[in-house]
Length: 66
Image (tube, one colour):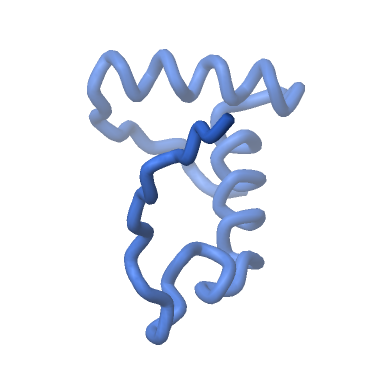
């Protein structure tokens, strides 16, 4: 078994990690982080808005005709 280690995070990051642990019903912070990282690695870049030919979003004014 690997030895535990300590990392420094901002208080807000710790709060987010605590919520993630509860949402995932994870037993430990390590488990929550591993699940998050594993899930993230499975998402293709093309699904993250990184398509090279994709044009930037441009908001069009709404038409409110009678």
